[in-house]
Image 1 (cartoon, rainbow, N blue to C red):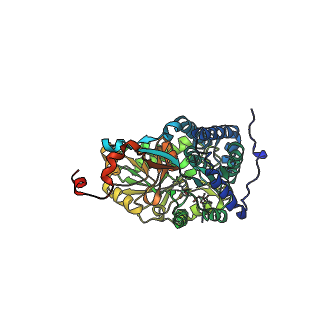
Image 2: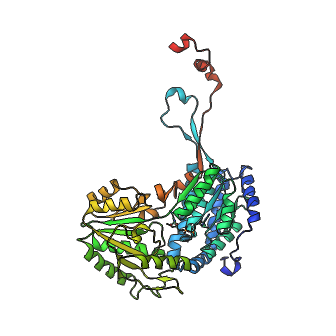
Length: 472
Ligand code: NAD
């Protein structure tokens, strides 16, 4: 019945930069002992992590409250329960994922060489987490790395220090310390980590830092998975249901105060349906937050002053008109869900990622215009959210690109645990979740085994290449 309490966990402390090369060497050396390869070892680590997290549940929920003001309900749904489910899924399926596969479409002659695909771990990997879902975005990839048989260093986001320190505690208590380490730090520590040679770097965060990571990784030809920023459009056609669109898109801005990489960054709506959509947004706001957002314990806060000020500046710089919301309070890091009608696709609210509770809406003449604008503002968003008839939503899917899409909804695709999640183009590369988390840290090693009895048949490949051989 032991349950971890916050006060029993060490405070957040950045690792000394001098220690980083030795920790890196430790996990590299551990990988080369081959002890992380057997599936039994991996399952044991996953099981142990599961129970470590279960024991730490109250502390983890409290950490999410302290860092982001998340309600326990939301924190369980999107963080703790989310990761526990990922571990269960992986544990149930790991033996199957890790099995050798025979090569596809093999002809009879090559069959004798028993061509197959081994699932080998990539090696020692670095995982760099982001602040908005501090548990899910750090532990999710770690589950994949453990499942694949890799060793790993996890560097959580320093902007969510409470979640970071509880994760460090749980990992230290639950996992093999030679193989898995959580190191705390900000830019200097992450830079020192990037100076080490890894077998893969898994990064979640913004585009600018994503470029820094990719450049650094390129120096040592290290493969990367980059889970980057949003600027995702929602497109509402004149045949959409305005009530459903309003409720679902508002939900995406209330959850984690819109600090969600896949939440819609802007809405393009057919001008005919705009008035009813705004009316439905008002109704939904009253239903979801009868006493308003302020003081509502289900509604979180902006992570820190820097991000709060960035959002305020964004709102100050728009030429749009605030239709709903707009209240903010710096001392409480409070930011009301704020609906702004803008008049141009060049408005900064469309071009820049708000990563907060701003909901800019641009009315358009028709679907073709919406598709044209969305392809221009950001051609490769992380998600796209078409609302309309089946023909219209199909048209949107076939004339745009994005990491994923939720039809008639906001970012629901990202919550399906077995669907691979990732970006395309500027929104990232590589994917994870479900089986993809295992594959992300796995090398498909093609292997043949040539039997000795076949030597006579192989005669054709050896020189001299006589005419007789040529005719064969
Ligand atoms: P952040 O501040 O938490 O930074 C992310 C990580 O990068 C942290 O661990 C941080 O220490 C590290 N970092 C920051 N600057 C660095 C530098 N110069 N060199 C090396 N490492 C550095 O988060 P953020 O980047 O502000 O996160 C917000 C962004 O992340 C948004 O753009 C959001 O859309 C994106 N995001 C993407 C996903 C996804 O799955 N695609 C998920 C969450 C967030």
